[in-house]
Image (cartoon, rainbow, N blue to C red; front, side):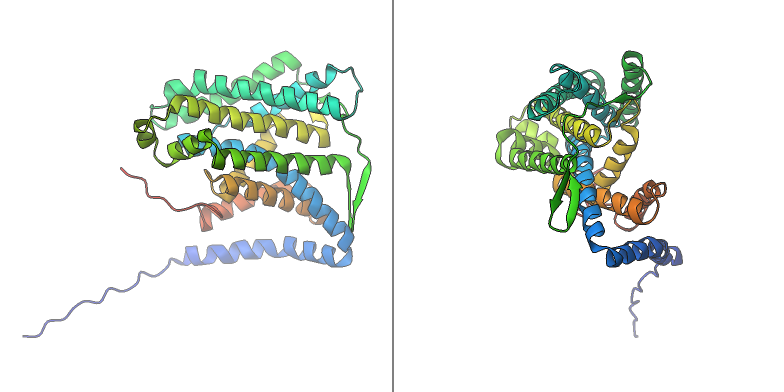
Length: 340
């Protein structure tokens, strides 16, 4: 008697999944063609736009780091983070006012930056202690709704305190033109990029070389095991919120220097773009948030310069859809299996 063994056959890939990359590539043809054509026609302008995009991306990266750090230790998307960014810009106005209206220079700039970073760090710790810690072990939907509620609360408190009329951010730094080889930019963009890169390097050193950084990484890997090994999880989580909010405050100052229009809803669009950057790089991955922020700023600036300034945000959010469809773990993220 003969027996036959069934050979398993590969499951065919659905047509819809095979068409998705083709559709995305088709939609990207026109923007990419216009950017390439613009680069060929005016290389100096292209390099200048690239530099400005990377400078803007540095600000997005600072905000994205807050999202990704909190998600890394808690698995929570802190939607109030963009409003902490907004309050950092307002804190910068008051920090600059300490030296009188119209004061410019290094000292007023650092005073505004210091006040924004410290006040936002304190605010981040308070938000974690009063809003998120009581619902930390609740069902996942509860912290999500809480984050949205905290965001709306901060926005409305800002409207009550500062009013809904946009305020002009003081010109702490001169917008003098700067020429670096073929690149033409201004001093504000140069300071934005330099400050953002410096803060990202310092954060990387803190996470990789210090005890608090090692504790953050331990909690991100396995919170229960870290607690059994003697890590004070409450303190580390509060520190994570504080550091993320500190970076958001710095981002608020740098963003307001370049686009000096401060109002209670100013954090909505940059916050959403920074969230896209965090997802693009791999949510929960600190280097990924940095790379994602720089890429999103670059894409937005080039799209605004060569395609359409009004269409540039749509291109940025299309990247989020593409990443979720093609590589949900992000560029530098890893696929993890959740234990049930």
